Image 1 (cartoon, one colour):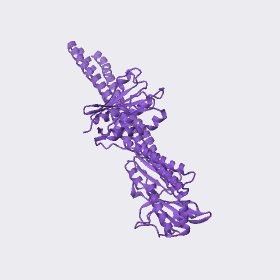
Image 2 (cartoon, rainbow, N blue to C red; image 1 turned 90 degrees about the vertical axis):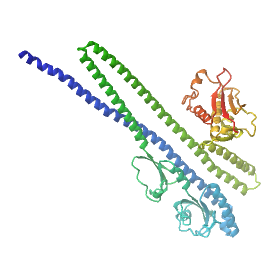
Image 3 (cartoon, one colour; image 1 turned 30 degrees about the vertical axis):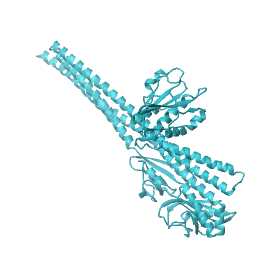
Length: 563
């Protein structure tokens, strides 16, 4: 009995060792389940917030630049009018005919500069001419000497005030400029700018935007209930971005919601927690399986062999499941990266349309200056140059209209598209690149009535992409050229775009239409992928001929012929 008692305590100690090890493993597993998801959450959230901050800064800068451009254009208008001889004559002579002539001119100028109203006051604040002179709510005859923008123009050349209109009741910015004959004050010219269209455009974005004056009062806003009130506090869960507006005491404040960043981080943390839970479960399962195998080995070797075989099969199944989950995670990561890249391209398209739109605004001022110059010196030595400037502004306007049309969102309506118009527009959109490289383009004879099934904007997108690729492929070619071919195949029309560049390499064919596969240093690898998808949406196809050494590259766009 004494021997049995002496042996018993070591047995209890040996049972305690696995129990302590089990507790330690449980604590370590719990720590991993907490630490790994938390670290994943904060890491992913920090990266997502940095991306949101950069995107928000770019959007805020774009909005500030838009305001600066509008203000610069209207400042130029009042400055030019303040030096106009017809305006000065109307203030000096005061005849009704001269006032009506100035009013008609202000009406034309208001339409061209997209301002709300332009009007001319005497030195005592009495309005003698206005762009709305023939309207029921005309400013002519009203006394605005009480206005801050009028009093400011009397002591300095220019002044500005954001306020409600006494006649229209609409908010807007008043820009004024004194009109002088030498040192003598003749009057004040004023232009009013309203921002309803700008606010409506900003409201389509989820980013709340406010423009405030130096005292913090809101004047332009996507939330009209905040106008003329102190700047509202930053909404919870939003990232504020504040930028100054050049030439003013204004500031643009944009609030970027951080909800998407938090959701993305939460999804990543959940995925990390699920992965850790799965790994811990697999480890525990393996540990228990090994324990069962050890306990049963002493009793029955045959049963142990059968059990080991079952464990091996289960392990293979679990390993396969792990590989499938890892592959799914890789696909998810790739899809997220593709989505970010697509969002960047959409933003680039919006910026392109905005730049094309903004070019037209200073262009109108250039045209106005040229026409004023012709009117002030008809038949003078500069008349031919001014007329040439006017024609060139028309040409630039035509080009920007084409750019805006190309950047415009597709309507989704498929119909008959004139093939000749599509090719001519695509060549115009790529004209600068073609002329810079001096590359001739050979065109086929296109019947005037030939049309294909599609949507004009998206068919132009395919041709612009193919032409741009052809131009870039021939940057170092001695005698470059591009040929556009036309074939009729029953109810199909085949357009070919051929160049005499180095051509495609055999290894490129397999990845030619794969997303983000590109051989260009600055390329994105999406042009041909998007173009093929567009062609297939119209029931057509985009393909490339097999490469032939020394014969350049040929792409074929097949579309259905319109009835």
